[in-house]
Image 1 (cartoon, rainbow, N blue to C red):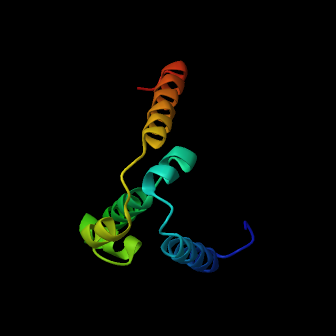
Image 2 (cartoon, rainbow, N blue to C red):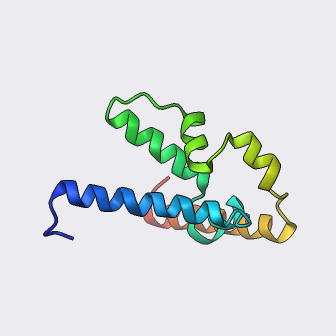
Length: 111
């Protein structure tokens, strides 16, 4: 990737991001909590990262507009249609992941 010019690299990264969104859209059965447990990010994280990238470039983009882009529809509609309540097992796994992250941060001296 080092040999790619900035424009080409940006275009490839954008295409990969759009494909990730399409993949997540195809797999609505994958719940955000599952993503958080396994990969430490979810659809909401992607939305927040888009807003942060926009802010870095002084581009106006609010969180709800970013979520609508990531979810492919208004978030509340997606939540009503596709979000399932977290199971006890999912909640326990998520809490264990968060505890492990806190412990690792303490070990590294990061708060």
